[in-house]
Length: 628
Ligand code: NFS
Image (cartoon, rainbow, N blue to C red; front, side, top):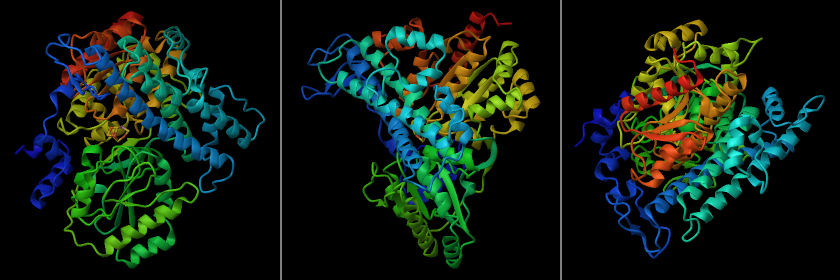
């Protein structure tokens, strides 16, 4: 049996895994240990797109064999990769679509429970894509903005609206390559078509459409999700928040929301403050109702409203083992089916809410934006009932870590520039003068195939020690928050240059930007850095890199590929579905850069990852003539 300290560095998750073993409860950590990853699939050397197969090629002799149809290793790998991009992009895009649906119903007045909270953001987003805002009402601007943003999804010809935000030279490269996205529905459909048996059988051409589809995610679906969420629920500004399992309270009704769309969570925030429900909780013997988040909608609610965050992807089963969770309410994405049996062991109701995501064995209470509280009130009532009838022994790990979260790209602008001269100029200046060596987006999942949080933490440590400013989202941000890096006091861990900047501004060396769709904020920040000047003319010129050291989802592949297609060097850890030394491998890890885009990198070792990223930053600094 593997020692628990080798599964995760997260102290609270360790404690709960110990308890799970005592209680005889199985988690994904156990299943990963008991199921070796399929070696053929891990290399992406198999194809199961038709029933002449499934075909298996030999990763040790990749050109020794082809599939029954004649497909080569490069076609097979490019198709498998493309399907991951399509699925990941579809996930972000469909999440964005739900936000667009909500926005439309708010703008047309069909929904009154939500409203446009951030008019300033509405105006700035509208202006960024050329919508007239002067002397016009909020309704008029919002109506036009809705119509424009809908094109992100449905447009069949032309460029998506947020292409207007892309630096000119980057956009020129995309146009030359024919990869400016039209509408995301079209791009995803075409990618699915082209990867069907017998259609696109040139790995380069397939990858082009993968790039176009990934860009339709980053500059489309994801960006729209972020921007509309900001407009409806508020743009984040820095806020102190508690993270880790210690945010659960034994004497409260504990409500956990784990998922990705902020709308249900926003409604839950209303429900848990509903006086009648608060009274009902008190009547049941509780001090009150304690609302906490997990995963990405948790990261958004933490950034916008300071709602405590209980942990990232690999802690979602473990937290149920506390016995203190009175309800776990989920919507979409990254919800393990294994939660059902763990929840069952501790009599915790597991509630699915989204029409797209039912789970066998869970209770489904459908959430409808038109009557949001109907669902969330009912969930709270279920939680109160469970509290009243608690039988499970309760053990809550006594650790919580306070940090500062909520650095939107707008706030970074303001923070570094001050209110009157808000701009990215000071960031660029600090990069040019060498105090900040470069910027790294460290993002993505945790994965039971690697010690939870370890690669995130070690990578970020190395980066900040070498004066690289780190921007974070998603589960990675939670990994670092639990280790205390999201505080201004953590500046002592930074190199002398970055430390000086952090101390002058009073900011942490690691800036938490929110959920995974909020990776779009990193794209905007990069565009601003180009626009301000002094660091080249395209995103590919910037000393900016990306990484997902513990990734696991197809969404992560889509994000990685839109970072790459936007011009960034992006390094993944754990594993990469590819056979080395194939033509497809050379394309992703080198060829795309020669076309003016970014490129992929891979290393399972976080120290090696850091060296690769820093070397790239230094190469870019040299090309810019700012290496000293
Ligand atoms: Ni991102 Fe969020 Fe976490 Fe990975 Fe899953 S929660 S959208 S996919 S596991 S970072």
